[in-house]
Image 1: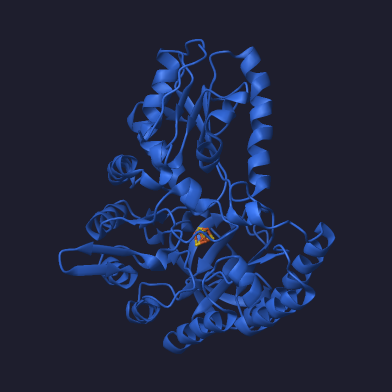
Image 2 (image 1 turned 90 degrees about the vertical axis):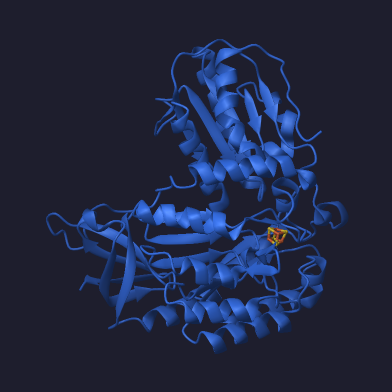
Length: 473
Ligand code: SF4
């Protein structure tokens, strides 16, 4: 049996249909939330921007780090008080934390609905049920690795509602794959997102065409290991490079991106060649290394050595000379010695990333690293290593950024920058806007808000390690 339904505690009926969704975690979760929002609108619910206006609150959760889970638990604690004064209120926990903790989440008095990431297609029905039948509901996959029926339902939901995603004007995410089969020893994703499955190319391209018809300019193909995309039909096996060629033909779409890539030789050359050959494919690669020590990479079950990783960066730069590359690292993995860390520093220096995301190791329940390895690197050492890597990366990023001064870059404008809605030069009618280059550099400049979702050219006048500043050309 793939799913279970639990009916335990009666709740009061509600009349309102205002739903607020708060999303934690990665782009996969943002995409899931966009799908749920579209499905809820279709079912007659209204989406609202705050808990205060809501009759139903959903938390779309992340389990990758303990901190993200603790934040959700703290929010649930606050909602308990709201629920005491507003008993008709419905609260749901969806996503990875729901899958990981299941029925345990009902220990939180506020929680009425718990729904895993493979079952989001059922959320409108679960809310209706919570409202009408006044029951708590659990819908998670018992054996996530075998959740094929949930996968079919999700595919139907995705095809039907995968056109309604406009968190950033002009941009949308399209899922190419579900799940992950890699089982890196520290990672909870394979346990909560299930088996690696690639969606049919025709469904993906259909979705991209609909997005283009809706005015979307940039599509990002998503997968936990997007470069492992593989779909067999008849004699043909489609890989990510095929998808890029096909998506590159869709009129109206101007930029294509894909995240996140995994350091593996399979299809790597083909994908880099597609990046070079298809003008719409942004010349940007996010390729997490995690460590520069072969000993640590082995303990992480990453399946490559630091030399093999650097070899992939060489291939990428040979085929796409102006490629912009980002990396990820985990510092303080169990048994990481000073020497292991020095090797990571060496890899970071050689990699010349545009930016990198650096995380301090924290054990996740149920993973192999948690079961077999002691979290034996003290927090002060993790902090020190984190700061050291950030400092080196800042230097590299600053040098790369400074090369843009005096150049004009094409950007897709996202909208007003979050920190300041005032224009840099206080020009009437202008705001401080933010956009990104094809190589994923953040660009800040003054302009009218109407540029959001459109392309613009900006002449760069100054830079900081992570940001380019300039004027509209
Ligand atoms: S590739 Fe490794 S780190 Fe990435 S999602 Fe899969 S198991 Fe997690």
